[in-house]
Image (tube, rainbow, N blue to C red; front, side, top):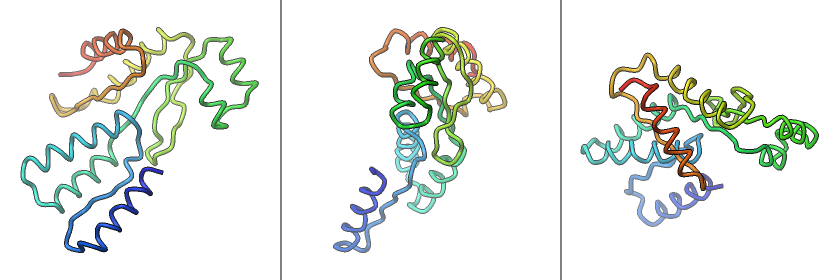
Length: 166
């Protein structure tokens, strides 16, 4: 919905001012991924790169960007029809905490099912470490977001800093 609204807004501005340079691209991500892409755009614009170069770099970056997250419960997966209510009840009784990721095309996929929140956080750290192990030093910037769980987020940040290359 936000992408479509942005396209409509761009088109309206271009009707009145056709020489404006406006870039709209679906981030194919959410929350922290969108933040990371905005930070990249800000840095490239601040460097003074031409509009076309900023757009090209943003598109290339978006195509390589990965998003991983852990769900506290399965209610949203039940509500949006990704799992049945029965599977959700069983998963909740087993304390399943799915590690979710993007599939590279803007869709959410389940990477792994883990029992318990602490185990899920540990597995998330291992997955991020695996994805970044071949990255050159200082070439990866991780962006985190959290919802009403600052203590867990700070613990996760500490674990990521210990597990991932600097």
